[in-house]
Length: 144
Image (cartoon, rainbow, N blue to C red; front, side, top):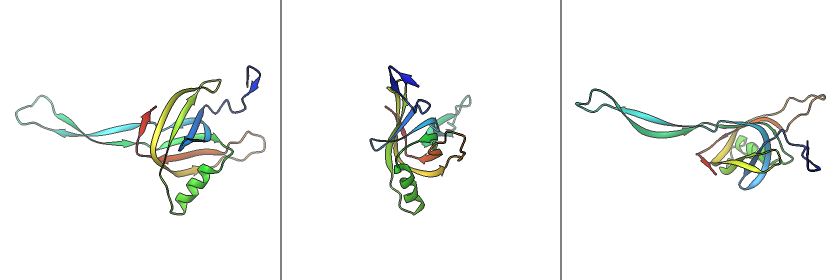
């Protein structure tokens, strides 16, 4: 795709992935931007028409980055460290870009590390990607 004479070869990769402030990859799909707060029912004596729902802890789903492309080994090396028992939590961001590459939405994730990496299907007749999916666990998401 071209815009104003400039060629944008990664236009199908509309999510930019930053790890500790450095652009590490782009992805065409992101899932798992979800959180849920558990509740505990509490029945109050003498109140028979409802049950109180008290908040407990909040759980975060794993973030899954799909169909990604990168020219760096940073995410691969980060996961290899986890495989070798040396994991370091890192914060980062998922940025939704518009068609000309400007930032539109940003989700910051906190204290993450990769727990699953799935490579691409390698076929000579297709445009392969650097990874099919990467799964990250984390300690929270903030809208930025």
